[in-house]
Image 1 (cartoon, rainbow, N blue to C red):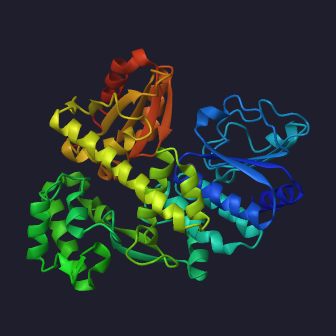
Image 2 (image 1 turned 180 degrees about the vertical axis):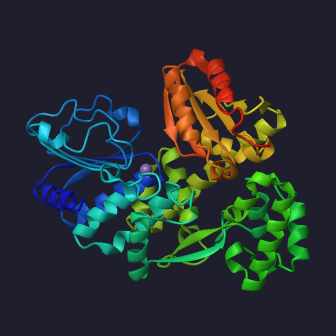
Image 3 (image 1 turned 60 degrees about the horizontal axis):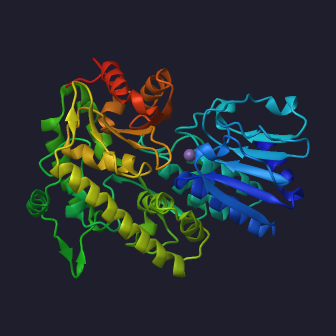
Length: 463
Ligand SMILES: [Mn+2]
């Protein structure tokens, strides 16, 4: 892999006309930002495009060198290659072509993929990490923090509650550079910016008395002697003292122990404690300071067709782009809230024996997963929730998204694999993480899909 990186460095140094394709999510944006910074520092002319995977099905290669990051391994990107083409792929998804493919073609081809080296591309390194290792070849260790952002955005830490493998190697470098700090701490989303009484109300892996109930979270904070405000500032998780945190920790353990079936009790601590990552060059009490909050903002940009805003922010162009991001994030949150309200008011979650689902028609397909994750706490946390919506205006096949409580994944269920199998058996495709995954299926296969998913989950979930 190291040798492949040296080769990649040379290909870039010798190229004058470069095109980057990267993926439409936080990892893809982070990958694209790292590559852009490398090329800018080398004074290389380049273009970058943030694309969905289907864009690569029939791609013309019009530039001297085409770089694919966080995608490419699983797509037919060599279809139109000629003997003058140069292709560099930095991807962590399961590869279509094998490790020796470069020796079978007459053009320059370099694919760097952790799966070739016995590394697990879903937890040990992601697209952004792979791009950082390239930056490292050029000595740009100051970009290590973006590798961490990418990994968190890609949920690489979700199974273990921390970064492992090459991700951990990059983390150590980022710490050495003074750019990132890691703390094993209570893990609630929004530690830097979200009021604690709100953050607690979003607890949704298990339905607790505090879930979606701010009166209850306020009462509990009072009981634990945690003030709602410190001076003029609303208390966030990052403000808590050690004793306050340990009181909160005990309270959460107590609440969870009362709700969780016996089989899952052993996983309770993993639900509330994890390593969290802070970016030390960013201002405190801003979303930029926390890796998880930062990654949400990057996703909001790409899902609202503004990847360039995310890219500029990662490249350090903060002034005007932070203002733009604020507007995008606000609209994004409003869109999510409106749709969730509608689903909730209409009692739209339909229960089957082992799964639950809702019809998300009208919801944009690139946010239907986010909404499924947020609506889980209104349904039954013991079952995965499945949402479907038409792909877009031109394509009325269904985009499916599935989310579930992390507890189900801790006990070994991998919904990414289940959904892939079911979708493929119906002429579609799918995959993803154990707790968050998706699929595309033909429009007339919806009923069959739900029936098969329900059957596949039989006996796997202990209630
Ligand atoms: Mn990725």
